[in-house]
Amino acid sequence: MELTESTVADAKSGSTDAVSLVYRVLAPKVLGYLRSRGAEDPEGLTNEVFLAVIPRLTALEGGVAGLRTLVFSVAHARYVDETRRRTRRPVQTAYEQEYDERTTPSAEATAIEQTGSGRMMHWLGQLGEEQRSVIGLRILGDLSLEQTAQVLGKSTGAIKQLQRRGLENLRQLVERDGR
Amino acid sequence: MQGEGDLIKEMIRESELDPAEYAGVAEALASMRALVPEQAPVPSAELAALISGGVVAPLAPPQGRRHRAVVVSGVTAALLLGGGVAAANNKLPDALQRFVHDVSEKVTPWEFPEPGAKSDGPHQLPEPARNDVDQGKHVGVGDGGGKTGNLGQNTEPPKPTPPTPDKAKPTDLPTPPVETPGRVEPVKPTPTPGGKPDGVGGGQDKPAPDKGSSGKSTDAKGSTKSKG
Image 1 (spheres, rainbow over the protein chains, first blue to last red):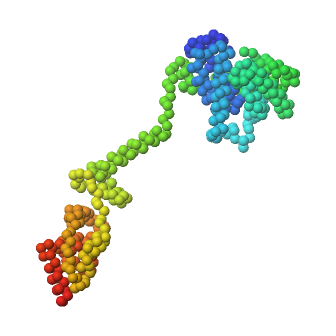
Image 2: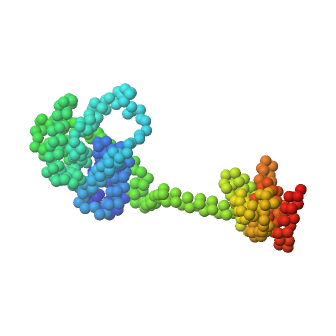
Image 3: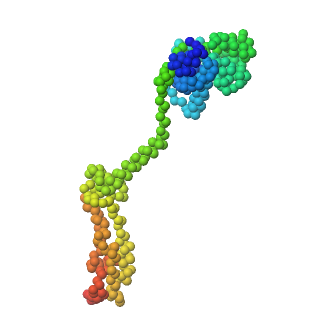
């Protein structure tokens, strides 16, 4: 399922089918990006992102690329807002057994941790904030260097440098911990 | 959109890094894709309405707690004031009026009328009791010591002092409260015009005005006592 220029044009003119398709294509990527950043409520934040984006579709410029840039700009801004909010007041969460470190992880959890994104999340957590943003937006948002630069409000050259340092740091971590 | 492998290779190329040295990194980056679910998350009701073209009603602006507190305080104050005025005028239902009367009698310095009491007009709270001791001193000095018992040494007959109008009017006296069991009201001495001073605490009583006989009657009393 891919977005085409005609789909974005239809969504811009108010077609509910096209808007629905935009949501179905982009919402999983936004959710993945917010998960990679460790958002407290990634599903709720994804909802907020599209609540803000859909009313702005009529004024959208730039077709599919412009839509991706807009969606991830809002997503990144929401994540930053949530991070600031969390630093201002402590978070109270309900008890969930799966996050209780006093228990032994299940075989399934161990398998996911070893084979899936668990180790990558651990490595990402050791990168700088901006390096994490660049890698997350590029891999999970399918954004180009230029689009990433627009989302983060930096020059393309600065994004290129952040990406390079991020990849170098990742290599060290991967070699240290083993693959 | 390019494949994930293509994108990662491009990132390594853009960064002018050796793809062979970064094979492990490329594999780690590819595992990040597991964070992206296959299905979009279920939209909230508000978002679903927006996607389907429905009109989303804007949320009402939240009313501040301060605004609510001001409104509640105003209503409460109005109720209390209205209730207080009604109680003072004995306009409340009997049971409520009795309750207000009992509570006010025990807790506050004011007294509200009991149910059934006459309520022709606004209830007047009784005036504070007079300071009889001060009045007695004042009267005694004015008497020139005539009530100290040394009547024989008096050369001048005591001038009858006309009673002060506001002190002599019986209508100005506070209405004695109804005596209830278990409650004893202090008895105040009432000045009686023409009454005989008791001699011991004579300073507290005023001499009887006797305009007709002037000082004669006093003289006669004094002579009788001195003779006896």
